Image (cartoon, rainbow, N blue to C red; front, side):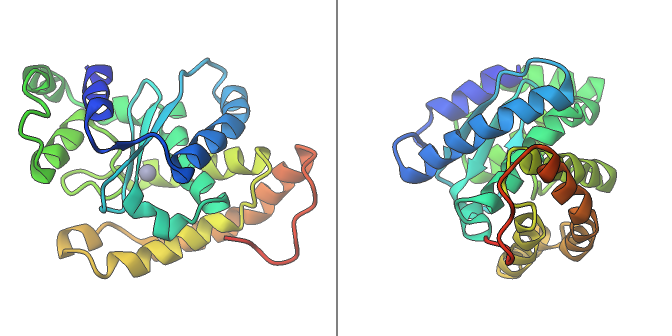
Length: 227
Ligand SMILES: [Zn+2]
């Protein structure tokens, strides 16, 4: 079901295939794949697409399909910050969060919806569908992941990016910028819980992440953090 829905998204005009950003995303995923396989102990078929959508969002399906909206790029930049967001989404999949949040009733409902899914793909219906699919929507209007899942994804994502030799210091900065961007959004989106808390937690985890990075044999970090 999830795969079918994702295929519909991928076929839609919103997918950007040929751009520097899309190319960068594919490169980042390639770097994160090894650490992800190590950490999850299973083979996940990662497929990450860039969607032309101004909402600052990203989401993950249980099977390893991940989508990144162009609207999140101002908060991430195109290097370590973007790796932080992609690593975070991969972490949701590794930790099996998308499956956990779906009830039997929702599974049934999704089954009914899949046929007509993106027929009238207004942003509202897409959000509804994402939510019903349990697509780990970072700014899910209806049902964002729980704080516990978010913290876990932040922690695992940080390890992934560190082991892939990205600068983990970029991760808390993403959420700092996200907080600023969210201020301009409708209230329902900006009430998503605690960017400040995430910033603090990620900052606290940095020494461990830098240790992971050193153990992976990466080049030493520059003295000041990049984006
Ligand atoms: Zn998340």
